[in-house]
Length: 245
Image 1 (cartoon, rainbow, N blue to C red):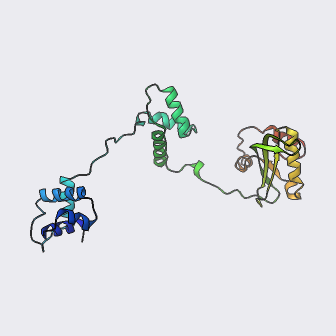
Image 2: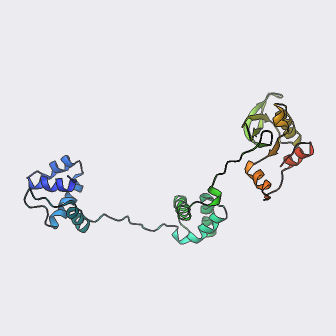
């Protein structure tokens, strides 16, 4: 039996309102709202054996006690939807879009959370795009190695026993996914080449790998789509006999 029908049955049997709310596990205000709506529809009183249908009770509640709508139905940044769409097409994220609106639009008074919600809504409306599709990149042994060279915070330099800024060189082989990493304390090209040579000594496969910063970029180059320029590390690697990209 539906809870609204049970509410009517309990009241018709003489049960007190507080006991009805307890038995149905609903708040007293909720029970009062349902009881008032059903009473206004003339369905609360009657024979105990002839209860109104579930559809009748639901219609009575919707008519006499409709759900309260939230006070705000439109986003506070809806006015700037075209601008947000343009910035999103240019690759800007929610935080960057919010900063642009805050700086360039004097009348903008929205929040970062509102911008994030609008960006998420636009993504749902557009559906998946080509950039969202992940394509696995299959490579042959010894063909491609992905290299990253990034800041790693302050560390103790074993040579000087002093705390210095450090960087980490990481090479991952595209086929086996074996990884080599080395912490260094400067960003000179000679240091990068030294780390690259150290990785090459780990095995003949690493020695003849083509060094790429991004497997995705290397794949695009194979397809004839050239984007960006080679870094100084890649050029230096190529000049030393390694195929850099």
